Image (tube, rainbow, N blue to C red; front, side):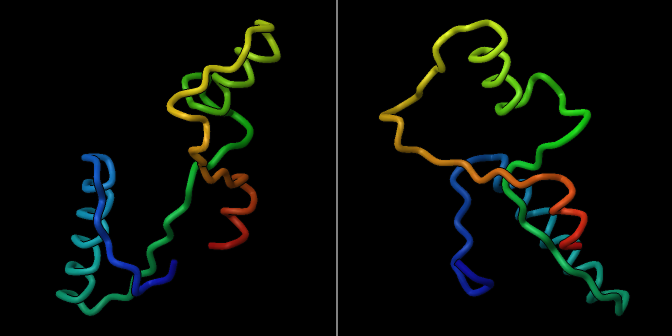
Length: 90
């Protein structure tokens, strides 16, 4: 996937992210500014909120000794990136 990949969000969350990105691009064009957009997956790290998917998984499996909950057929994937790696890339 690269910058030329068609943008077709399927859910309101993705639509809101794309809309915000487009607003920023238009604003920058209007006022002669430069911008760069980063599209990260799920950023995790210190001070992680316990209501997020990775921390909920860790809590359930390792702290509560329960089996993980698998939705669908279990073949779905998610992209995780560590917060320090995000900082380095910016």
